[in-house]
Amino acid sequence: MYSDISGYAPEWLKTAGTIGAIVGAVLVVAAITVLTCGVGTATLAGAIAVGAAKGILIGAAIGAGVGASAGAIGSLMAGEEFGSSEFWSNTLYGGMAGFGIGVLAGGIYSGISAGTSFNSLMGKSFGKLGTVVKNPNISVNWSNVSDYAMNRMTTRGVTQSLVNSTVRNGVSLLQSSGRYLFLTRNAAVVTTATGTLVTTYGSAYFDSAMQEVIRIIFGG
Image (tube, rainbow, N blue to C red):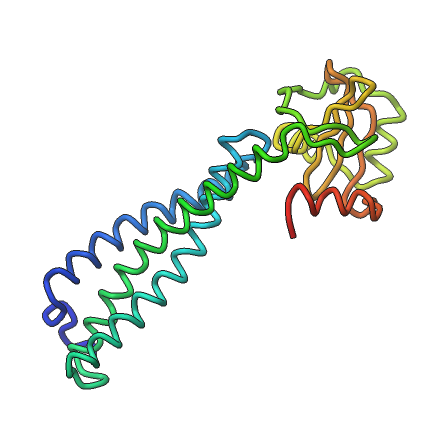
């Protein structure tokens, strides 16, 4: 069936498929890098990057499937025999072209959506929890952590690395006291404006109200 797949698809489809495969592969690698290297969503750029990365991976799968199906159907409509080398050639290159198109479309759409959602959260009030603001780029002062804060970390299953990650990458809420609440799906951290850790707790301790806030901010 695949004896000579490079010799049967039309030149335009082979060109589109080759370009799609190259562009798609580069962007998929970039997306995986973004999602695995700790890029946070606390900034507009980070939110767009993470959103686009997720869209790229989803678009890659959908685009490849749609493209392959289109290539197969087009081949049958052109009179090619199902299972012939011509059929599989068109299916393959159609999938490659669809892969590239899906990656681009998914990345652009999801990136714009993520950016729009991020901007819509700015200034949103969650009552006593605080109002969403730009991440203040605070670092926790680990040389001045109270016994109370350390006890909260220990009893509530939060590590130092999780605290740092939450403060660096979490959505920031400014509270009336001047403190900041940093939120991710995994933890909540409260610090002063100068980086003193006040308290923290993991997602296992999120009550129903906090779970609703997490749903509104992060979706799902």
